[in-house]
Amino acid sequence: MGNIRQTYIKRVAIELIRHYPNDFSGDFQKNKQKVLELTDLGVAVEGGPLRVTHKKLANRIAGYATRYMKRKRGT
Image 1 (spheres, rainbow, N blue to C red):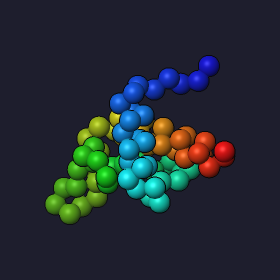
Image 2 (image 1 turned 30 degrees about the vertical axis):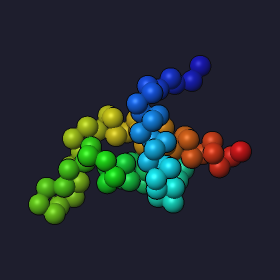
Image 3 (image 1 turned 90 degrees about the horizontal axis):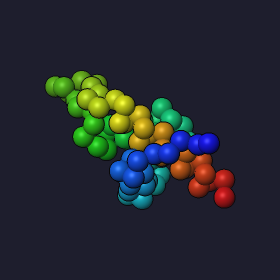
């Protein structure tokens, strides 16, 4: 049995990949940074590094984006 993800996680991940296809890859850490940069889940405080406000949601979106890219590349 695999993981079943909610529709909103899939929708956000696929839309981000459609709008920014060259920014996502099969690497989870890079995808997580991109999700935080491209959405409002990460907040920069006075020019400093991103502070994650919704870490679990960002991780789930990045995880699905990673899996989606690996599957897309494999076929």
